Image (tube, rainbow, N blue to C red):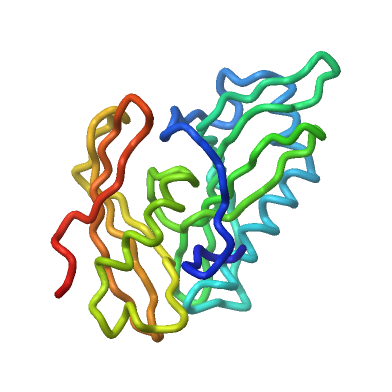
Length: 210
């Protein structure tokens, strides 16, 4: 999936809210580190990132891709007795630069019973939202659009920006602005996230347009 689309099939996952971030070589199970550094995994991450970039409003044929080198954990990686990765969800970020633009792409990897993680492209940008929150937020931002935008046939969330004053503590509320493309026009939609015992909730940060 190259971008988050309101008409795309939903990713049905019950995930935890945003977890701690670590350098790709910092305090991680050596087996997991081997997976991250493998040519196959790196190629798969870049493939998903490339697909994301091609789905952005201004795709560039000369884009270059550079992994950020940090891992955001949402579910901790676990291996079975045979050394297969069977549990875990994490995010890796890739910087895409070309044609005068720089985009931050988010690639999620979900552990699979087969031992081969499934890779999914999330919302680009600096959002803290996991895939479950992103799925929940997609229909919500529709209510933050003016009527003429909400009636467009092709409505896509194409970027996100974490508020500059967002607290470092992941247990504190934070704000983001998601950029939605509707009928080829960009609309910023402010959102408010409130962490709780059962994960974060999401709401519009301003009253809906009349």
